[in-house]
Each structure stands twice: as C-alpha cells, then as structure tokens.
Image 1 (cartoon, rainbow, N blue to C red):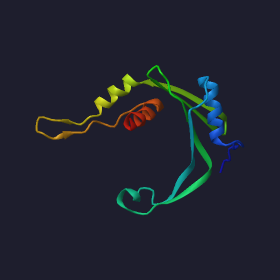
Image 2 (tube, helix red, strand yellow; image 1 turned 30 degrees about the horizontal axis):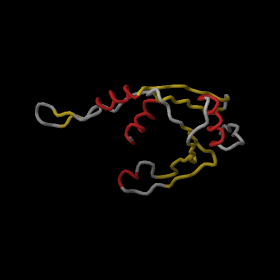
Image 3 (cartoon, rainbow, N blue to C red; image 1 turned 45 degrees about the vertical axis):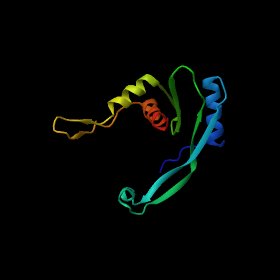
Image 4 (cartoon, rainbow, N blue to C red; image 1 turned 180 degrees about the horizontal axis):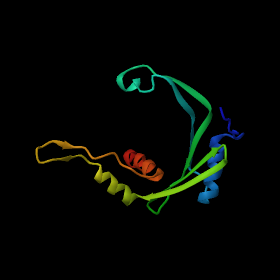
Length: 135
C-alpha cells in the first residue's frame, strides 16, 4: 500500500495560512474534520442499518472569509504522492441562483411532478450550492 508523506502541522493551521496568503486577509473562520471511511455497511444506513466507520488521523480543513463582490472562490489544496496540487474555481451568486431555479421541481401536463436531473458542476458550484441552501 503506498504511503504518502503526511504534513506535520495541523490541517487547520495550514488552511488558515493558505487562506491568508491567497486572499490577502486572515480567515474569519477555520474548521477541520477527521478523514473517515466505512468499514462495513456502507449503504445500509439509508435503510436504517448499522455502519461501522473508521476515523483517520489525517484531517480536512477549510478556511473562509466574507467577500463583497458576489463571488464564491474556492482553492482546493491536496497532498498526493506526487506532491502538492491546487485547484482554483469560482462561481457567482447570480449563477447559483440560476442553478437553484433550474432545480425546482415542475409539474407536467398530466399533473405529475418532474424532478430535474442532479446538478453538475465544479467544486465551487457544489460548495456554493451548500452555502445557498444554508442561506
């Protein structure tokens, strides 16, 4: 099994530092969570079953701060066996609103509910969708 070198500083510290360097301002909030994986019963929880989960010492972290230009910008930094890799992405709140409107169920001519297909999109649109839903 390949082993990737694990960073020695906490994920939350690295996220805060990366955010400050990229945004030019300190993060207003930083959060982290442990990596998890299912050991048994991966899809049983949808039907009331039991799932056994494992927790990793490695953590994921996010740092955020408000913007005033109506844009959600995301920088995803990952560490792989080949080294560090970063992906930048963004989406405007207007684009998120259009996606939200497209996802509203419609009624067809027979009176049946038409569920739109699952939205597709980049990392910023997926995270933006969560933010939009929370708002």
